Image (tube, rainbow, N blue to C red; front, side, top):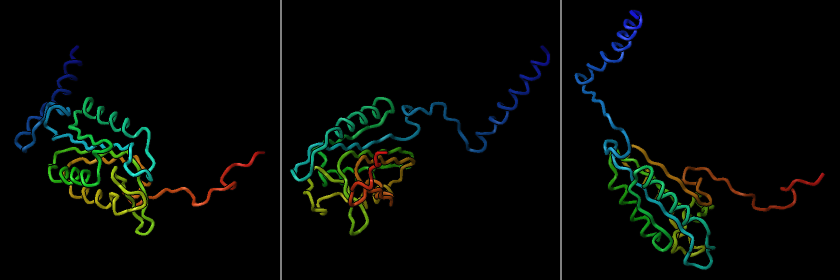
Amino acid sequence: MKKYHVFLTILISIFLIPSLGYSKRGISVIEDLSHKSGKLGAYKALVIGINDYQDPKIPDLKSTVNDAKAMANLLSRKYGFSVDLMLNRQATRAKVIQKLRKLALDSRPDDSILFYYAGHGDIDRVLNDGWWIPVDATGGDPSTYLDNTIVQKVLRSMKSKHILLISDSCYSGTLFGQVRSIPSVIDDKYYPKPI
């Protein structure tokens, strides 16, 4: 029993005594570091989902709005995010840029910010870049698309502690310089031959 008390005394002194000097060094202990405590900064999300494009030349999608709603619900309910949800007609080029700029302007150093985009994307083969396709885009007219460089500038200008971008679109890898595309011609040589 005596050995147990000696061991316990040593163990307590290892963990307790060093903590007594924290206040002298300007270090404070934060008891509650949950996302709801408010001590970690704001949790903000911009979630965009586009199924129904206005231009008939741009094919509609089926599940992007449901995916965006599910993501927004998960972020707000489980993780305490303040979510700005833009679906279909709300996700015009001008409105998306306004929301991106507002997040960049309002971001603080202790905030955590998440962007989620689900919709069409395209690649600029001339400038080796990519685009998000907003709901009001004109098919085949890149000047009506949202250039990845705008998204990159917003991300770089943010003062936030954590920034996460999730882009569920074709050519989303161009946001960070990676493009994975299918071959320009797909013929029989791409399929396995029967044995």
